[in-house]
Length: 415
Image (tube, rainbow, N blue to C red; front, side, top):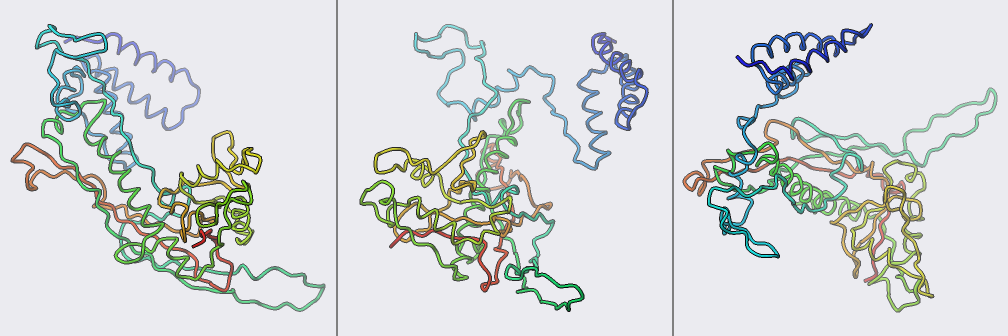
């Protein structure tokens, strides 16, 4: 039996620190009890890795969280673990022990000399719409996909009044009441296929499941977000832009940038500062007090607005940035939405309003998350494993009182 004196010393040092404290909270009491057991375990040959794993599981079990699964390859040399990834992440025509550089060819190293491996994957993940984000709009997470009725209230026209001493009081009903039904639709991330060796030889630095999570999160966010913004309601959500159009919200028609730069650009091919001012003016100011009030436009449109100049060629500086590089237009934050249309005839490239009035619904149940496939056609007989993900999501506009000011204003390019 070999005792790791360094590990034992660390445990004893932490115990001494806790024992010198006059008062202990519940977490410190649990930690001290664990350290007493851990010290005894190290004396009979256990490692700190074993102890950390057991402590993490005990805390997860106490809080009702899923238990962390131990990596069966933990403790092996990372270089050996990564070798199973080469067939998946590196070029097929690479030869072990031979590599090229600007100054020549590294050859003659021997067939059993391992080349180094970068345990980080550089991936390009697409930008997605803000209607998928909890911080930017209203998001409800449920455990089932049954249609959900959301009550709605419109009362923006009714304001408080002065009542004189001993004066009579009257009651006024809510301006409008109603409800909206929010269903969900199933989104498939589309599976990726990897070799069985790559799937099983997951290293600590990078695993198939981590790669799949990042890739699928981007795919799902882009697909769901696009439908939440512009879905037509046929076997998919009725998107925000479509819902506003169906309710008859009258858009502001763009005049173009010629007023600013003196060009011949019309409202069919450009937008200017007057267009933003008119769009903002069309929105009831009460909606701008919301913390989720924002402009929606895609990055190409933002670039166009950033480049606007006056008639002397000086930057118009219509877009301002704060210390965190958050863009603002006329004091209202800008949210990038890649699914917003580009500037063009009859398109709606800009929207402003209170995103609290958009509700996105996500279903978090046993059917959500990553799924692995081994029995699909072309998989196990070729030594491959498929990984996919399914998510159910939907959304709805929380506004139907057309007699009240709409919570959004839309800028539409001229035809």
